Amino acid sequence: MTPSLLWLRPWLWLAGFVLLGGLLWALGPVLTPFAVAALLAWLADPLVSAIERRGRSRTAAVFLVFLLMSLAVVLVLLLLVPTLQRQALRALEWGPKLGGWITDTAVPWLETRLDLPLSAYIDPSELGRLLKEHWSQAGGVAANVIGGLSKSGMALMAFLANLLLVPLVTFYFMRDWRDMLGFVHDLLPRPLEPTVVRLAKESDAVLSGFLRGQLSVMLSLGVIYGLGLSLAGLDLGFLIGMLAGLLSFVPYLGTAVGLGMALIATLVEHGDLFHLVLVASVFGIGQLVESFVLTPWLVGDRIGLSPVAVIFAVMAGGQLFGFLGILLALPVAAVIRVLARYAHDRYRESLLYQETVDAMPPAPEQGGAGPRPAPPGGDAAPPVA
Image 1 (cartoon, one colour):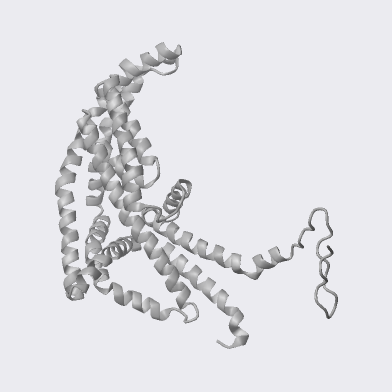
Image 2 (cartoon, one colour; image 1 turned 90 degrees about the vertical axis):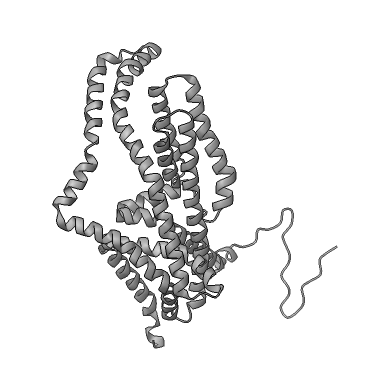
């Protein structure tokens, strides 16, 4: 590019980013299995590289890691899915019990304690009937979804294609990961190459530590909450605990939802203070373990986003790109934070910031006129004794 056309470079970069963003937005539904596969391949790449450094070929290392990942998924499905299925069936049977508790216990207790005529505004029997009716209807949601998929051949084929694409594309991404990174590296403009590589390494360090650690924290919390609530005597304890663990990627959301559901379940099933204390103790112990053991050990301060920023990133990603946006919200937010920190440092070093500071005249000292300027062509005058 000739010097006379250098002013076009920023606009060309901006046009390229806008075009890429529009293309990603338009292809969002199609890109979901590829995004999931790329995420899995990126998470598995350090293990593949470690096996490769021990003398194995890249293909053999990828095959071993892919086999381990497949066995892990099968093991999770064999262990967790039947348990969660039994818990879900119990939840469907548990609905009428909740309706009876509301009509026979909760509303009369509130009327007695608060001295409010709730029955004048809310018909407990009607509320219980509606709850039982809709709870029983909820049991057919999965059947309706499966029935709809079976009636729509194209939708079923698309779902199965996406399901089969993820492991297939993951394998090829893992095998060709280094070549793809090298191809992107060769395309970088040479003046920007050192800066882009440095920012990419910082982003990779932040993301790899955060995602691997956060997934471990979510699984550990799910097991802690699930086993603790089951030992506390809740029929739906494992289901509630796993749900609370999976929602813990949003700060405080998993604890709030899990504790609320567990307290309601305890009131319906037992209705005594002892079991309420047990449930509260389970979540209290889980929070202590997460705050002082799991998060410092597995996650640390690798992402550096405040809880408000995490919640906003997840909501914004879901609003803009649906499930794909929720999946990529925190990784993108972490990369944006790295870029924002770089932009902040560049701004502090720029003439815009420095001249703004240097343009401020020094304030005169209290009780004096300040130092006298040096006479032209000579040294500064000595201070007066």
